[in-house]
Image (cartoon, rainbow, N blue to C red):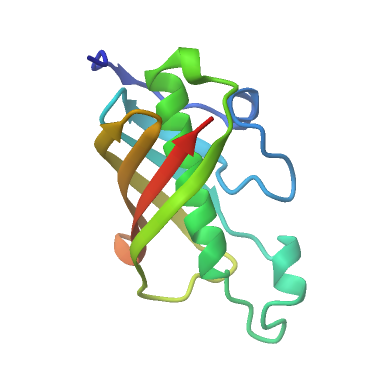
Length: 149
């Protein structure tokens, strides 16, 4: 059974100490709150300086939906690593993405809030309900499955 503990936030340095991703593929800037083994909230500041905006509709930049899913997945991995420190250092891979929906475009200047809830643990698989918000408006959602190897 996973201990349930509420933690404060993590800054980018602490995030980089946990996940193997590096620029330009770090899609989370801060962890706002964690309830170990249950849920997590993260934040991503979307700026015009992001390299993907050079080619993704440069005259009207929109954050690619797949990168929002990647950000949600990274925040989910942080939940796993904080909830089960013995898994820190193990790589996480997508095992599945179900019910993905993109509700509104995300543009430079937006602040994404990622909210994930752990739904199920099955051996090395984690299933999470994942939602992304801008100004309290739902912009993306999915059920994510990750495999930790």
